[in-house]
Amino acid sequence: MKRMTRLAASAAFVAAIAAGALALPESMFSASANEPKPAAEAPKPPAITVIPAARKEVVQTAIVVGSLVPREEVLVGVDLDGYRLTDLSAEEGDHVKAGQVLARLSTDMLDVQLAQNASSLARNDAAIAQAKSQIAEATAVEAQANAAFDRGQSLKTKGIVAQDALDLRESTAKTAAARRDAAAQGLALAEADKALTEAQRRELQLRVAKTEIKAPTDGLVLSRSARIGAIVSGGGEPLFRLAEDGAIELEAQVPEAELAQIAVGQPVKVTVQGAPEGIQGSVRLVAPRIDNTSRLGRLRVALPADVKVNAGAFARGTVELARREVVAIPVSAVVTTAGEATTQVVVDGKIQTRPIKTGISGRGLVEVVDGVVAGEAVVLRAGTFVRDGDAVTPVEAQDETKGEAKHETQSEGAKG
Image (cartoon, rainbow, N blue to C red; front, top):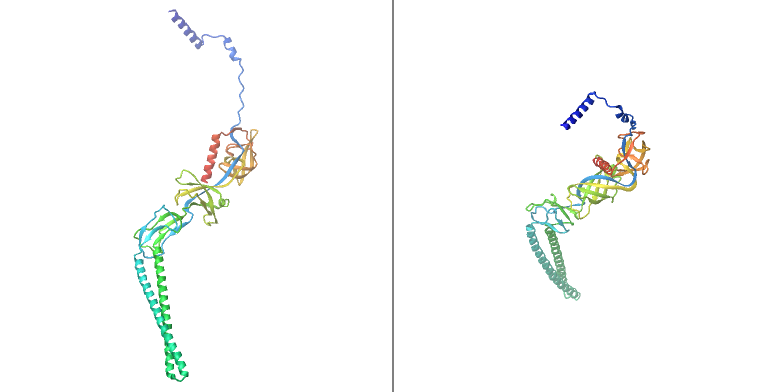
């Protein structure tokens, strides 16, 4: 009962104070009332992200796009018309050697012609032998007639042989000489016929050799239009297309402004559609002609011999134009107006807008030739939040911020 009485009295005392019926002594509040209030702090200038200019390696690059093509495309066709294709020995994607048989044509007709030619050669040999025999016979008759004529002339001087008999012997000798000449001409004609037949045989043998369609060089079979049973024609589509030595390279179109900065031998990193890793190549050819309509020039990039890529695939190349260590700032810290470049530098807590002279650029960095020295704090994103003379609180960019700025710059350059 006593405890409940004390609790009731305490509650009544609190209620009386709240209602104002009971006043507390002022000494209870005098200490807190006399404490001084803190003065209001002056507002700080707005914070701005800065990054120090520093010596870094800047690599200037150019992006080129195009397709993979064979360095030299070799067309394999036929020189014969009307022959049927009977055999195929190569498929697309095969690596072939020079002289390797890729396909064969039917030789039935040529086999018959070769048999006929062999018969003609035998006849030619017989005709030559016969002509030689006639020459030998005519030569003997001529010698006999000449001897008889010589004896007649000796006897004529002695008055033993009459003139008419001598004339007959002379005529016989001349006739024998003429027959010998005719036999010699027959031999020459037979030999000429044999030479013609032999030439025809060589032509037939050449045609037989051409029925074996061979690779003219080492290479990779890119396409095959040959089909077994097809009748080939010398003026038709090539039966095979080869990449000489299997060499594949990037053929790209480049704007004329960038083409002037590219030279043979410069390194190029090639990214092929679908390939996870880049391929290191080099510029092999810079075409000397710019297309009048597109204002683009042609570029050829050689790839390593052992690289496995497909001709016709889309590819992208990054050509290294220049590489040197210089004072550099991020691309986002540069503002270009009417061809004049400026940047914003924080000096003693205030913004200074300075004209600068820039050099090469790449990987999100720009070379500063004049206007900013190493160590000065430049605004990371110039011309966005502050103006010349503004008071700011510089905050150095964190590594993540630098990386994001660099990534954004590279993305913008890739879109361009």
